[in-house]
Amino acid sequence: MAANDYRVYLRNPTEMENGQARFHSAPSAEPTCRPLVFGTLVVMGLLQILSSVAILLHLTGYLHEVDFSSVQQRAPEEVETGPVLADALKDHRKKDPSRRCQKKQKDLMPAAHLPIKAPIDYVQKHEVETKVIQWSEAQGQLYNIRYHDGRLLVQEGGLYYVYAKTCFRFYEPELEPELEVRAQLIQYVVHEKTTQTTKPMVLMKSGSTKQWRSPNYNMYCQQQGRLFRLREGDGLFVNVSNAWMLDPESEGSYFGAFKTSN
Image (tube, rainbow, N blue to C red; front, side, top):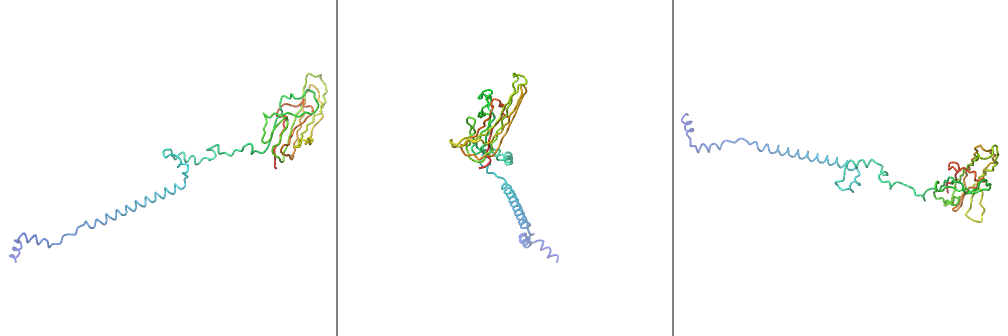
């Protein structure tokens, strides 16, 4: 038994090398690591794709809410987020004043308002006869109504409200004390039709007879207003008696008309 063990110990080295081939080698760990690494890479790739898609959807949803039509017209280097957002909050009508809705004079409703023309040098002192009052076109307003020689000339037919106010005053301290002055102060608003053969028609009349004493300061005002149907080309004027006593202040005596409807 011992001899056999000894012979085995003294075997040829070649046989020992060949004999080692009969032993099974230990399984390698490399094939097990490869699937784990591959799975990790796949998971990381999927996460990267999902995050990219989420960011893209978020940005796409935000961009749809903003109007960049005005920004696209500008150069890329001029585009700034601050000015764009500020302009979006502003009223677009304030950006360009030329876009404001401004009516032209020809589109305005016909209207006129004229104060009395001063000084009143077209009447002689103490003249009693009626005279046509002259009005100040430079200090008044005219819209689609013309003015000529004390007359308002209608340019557009329709229903008009016509008004007139005149103030008379008397103050002459150089006269003898207790001297009485009687004056008939009458105001007429007259309508001239387009046909020249028709006599002018009085639309309104107002007045009073005053008895004033000198040297006291005396004043009297009268005002009228009514609706009238007027045609294109019609004229309106105001006649008064004792026009030399008219108050030259613009807030006391004036004449006007404005269209209310067709």
